[in-house]
Image 1: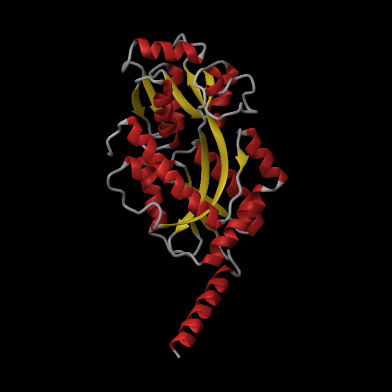
Image 2 (image 1 turned 180 degrees about the vertical axis):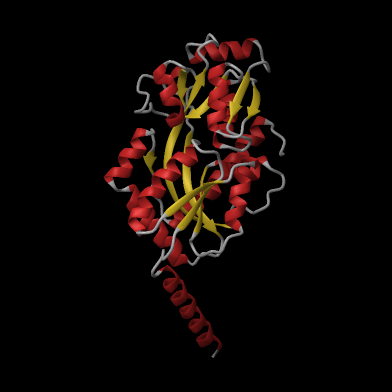
Length: 320
């Protein structure tokens, strides 16, 4: 009898999960981006949102809720109903949070439904034209000559650009001062103006400034060159062998979403990413679509959290 009740309950739960996915979405979907407009997560999120609105036949509205390394916007999603109508687009910054902050208002692995990765793109190390650096070796030599004096910006503590910086410091053997900003546009602006010397900017945000001569690109963070800046060497090519850092963007919902609903949104996201239009739009910002199942992405997140802990510990950074 107990087994029968258990099986009945399991069947009812599966049926409820399936019904929750049927007919979704029947109203507008809101996507929270926890960084400023123009940031990597914002640019990719808006491109994906536009195509998803076409796939779903419903508006997909993007809202920016910046602050606390992305925690403010992420918490808003954690507190929302697990019905798929409030989603989060974030970067690998979400996986870095547990390593950066001693006390987060949520559990990164348990309080989210890890739905799907969206796209990955490199960062590019830019400096202002008046800094005097023309190659990565020039910059590394200057940083080693005057340790702790060069100011290096990021899009905020715990952001993907911050983790990129910490990995670079470790592998290049340099000591620079981290200056966190509210987001990428502000960090890029102050780098170009010379108020800070350099920034690992998302390639989409940096490319127009590099192409116009307002910024100098010293290297891209990925193992291979970016199609957006084909003449810029990789960091590995330019002087730090083995360096490889990709700023990926993903899609999350609050914990407790029915499995069938999460899997449907995953499939719909993959369908959107496979469209020629979105592929072209992502290519224009130097990004490539990513594909994983819900289960694969959930494991990938756990691995990324562990990797972030390794980088932060090796860098000797105390939790905030």
